[in-house]
Image 1: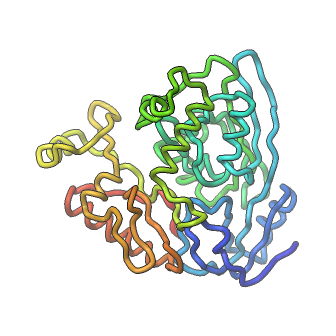
Image 2: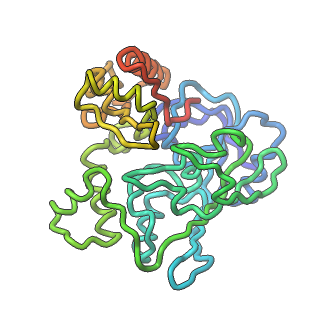
Length: 337
C-alpha cells in the first residue's frame, strides 16, 4: 500500500476547498481499492470520485481513497439496445461524449454534469427531464465491511429524486466500482421539451435534432448558466428542488403570481429552488471570497480561498430565509463532510 500523509484535497474537490487528509491513497485497480477499503489500521475512510458533489468543512482525520478505476466496455447488444459497462473512475461527461460518438442514445441530456460515473447512481443525477435511473441497468459495488462485490439492479437501488439506496439504508456501506447502462442503438427517444432545449435548437437552426444536437444544446445552455469549476469553485446545484403540497403552492401563488412549478402528482408540486433563492435576494450576492452565482441562484461559489465552513454558513442562511419567506425547507444536494 502507498499511503501518503497530510495531503491537500484542494485538487480533488470542485469547490476548491483546501482541506487536508491525514492519510491519502489512490486506487487505480479493483485490487488496490479492496486493499485500502479493508485496511483495519484506518477505521475512518472517505471515498472521493470526481469531488463534484461534496463540501469539505474541515480536515479529514482518516484515510481518503481516490477512486480512479478506468475502462469502458461493450457487454451486450441487440438490434435496439446496447449494454455498456463503465468503471467508476471514468469522467461522467467524457463517458457521455463516448456514448454519443458511438451513436448510443439516452444520456445526451446529462451532458456536462460534473463528477465521475461511480457517483452518478448515488445521487441519481438528472437534468432537462432525464435521470440516471432512465438508463441505469445495474452496478457493482464493493462492500466496505467484507470487501466483497455486490450487484445492484435498477429496482434494488430504490431511485428517487436525487436519491438512491446509497444515500439511505446503504449509506457508507458500499463503494460503486462500475455501472452498466442500457442505451438505445436506434429509434432514439429524444427529450427536448424541458427547459430551453427547443429554443436553443431553434437558435442553432436545427429542426430535426439527433442525440449529438441535443447534447450540444444542453452543453450550450449549461455553459451560459453555470460557472466552470476550473475557474470558480462550485459543486453545481447546491440544493434540491423542493416538492410541496399543492394546497401550499396555491397559497403561495396568491402572493407570488410568477412562481413556477412542475406537477409531481395530483397532490404534489415541485418548485425550483433557484427561484426561491433568487426571490429571497441571494442571487449574485457576494460575501468576501464566496457567495451565490450571478447567473444561477442554485450555485454557491468559492471565488478563491474560502473555507467550507463559510459556504456552509451561507447555505444555512439561505435555508433559514427561504423557510421564513415561503415556509419551504430546501435540502442540500451536496454531501457535507
